[in-house]
Image (cartoon, rainbow over all chains, first blue to last red; front, side):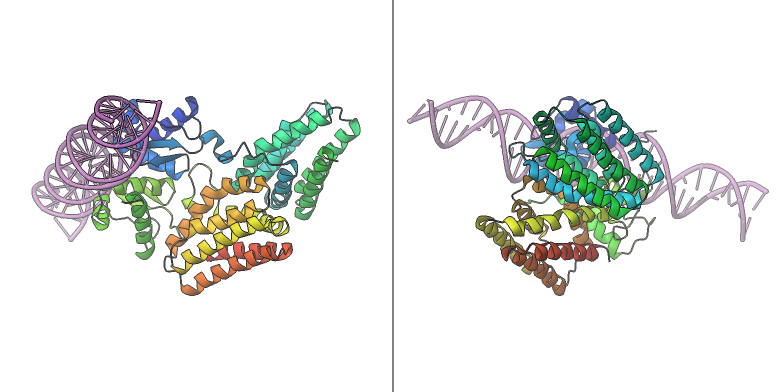
Length: 225
Length: 225
DNA sequence: CCGAAAAATCTGTTGGACAGCTTATAAGGT
DNA sequence: ACCTTATAAGCTGTCCAACAGATTTTTCGG
């Protein structure tokens, strides 16, 4: 009668524990015996779930010591981020320069109509936010993320998300520096994004890559003239 | 004394059976008890390997009937990816292609003498491992990571580490499939790496980027001809 | 207060057992 | 012979009890 295997439920249960208990990376999970007791299953079932979690890079088992959180599922893509070594502004832009230019190129080549709608929606949201003179970092990032998604290649999103936190800090800092953002800068930023989206819409790979490079180049100049 | 878990060996062993016995998609694997007998381990160990194989989309278990081949590893390397977010084999290499080529270029430009020593050490370790016909994925990865570090830009290392898990799985899968790696392939892999290191040593940015692109391109071809 | 020995925990692994599902086999009727 | 059906065999899913070996915690003597 039980269609779903118990080890699948145990897998989900352990993920839920990591999330709800807010176990940080490096924290120890309950022992296999304790988990088995909690879920009302045998230890063998818990082990089957744990080898899958370890295989997925979420946990790590140390013989004799216990199982530990290796990367939190919700933040899995941004794991291993050393908060001490903050990349320089230049640093993040260097990576975005190659990564997102390639993402824009591939997005122009491979985008489905559905993904195009997704990008257009993101563009509309960003336009609205910029015109109302709000900070709009989140909307900016979201548009870039949707472009990465439109490559159809999750690896781009993985790399993109890994940089997300730091890039966001840099952008916030940038706005703090030039808080009085003149209207012509806003108009320029808007136009740059629209050129990128237009190139992806027109399925023009080189145009999209060039527009993205230009946008990032100008963005860095705006931060550190 | 056993550093490696038995279930990892069982995982590799079952993949080997699928490949060597030329089991087609839909074919039935030996029973868990039979596999346990073949590998000289308990049934619990075989089950731990099988839940991972099922999670990776390679096999499928039907209660009461047996386990069946769902997709052959050689045909779909993507099946070795984590079940939640699935980067394709092509996917990871696409990102590495732009990311690591740029890292090699910058490493050649900016490397300090100290970082060069670090890279040379990694190269020596990789050479030793390859010549003794060991798997050498870890050494390979470590060298690439040290090149990323030599950019002096932590953002590259962040992006690189984010992809690490998945790329490592692809490499393991690749070696499992082509276990009998001929000496000329080892020599080629060694030479490719040495060309990259030489270009960084000579502070030749374009040469380093080109050598890295060539290496990754050939590496992908070796995995999926 | 410190360091070493002992105890408690924990993972990795094994063997056996049983329920319930699926396939193969045998029996029986037509 | 052929088809149906009942029985047997095999398999996965699950549980329990146990032990080796590694690690952490506790205890105890100086």
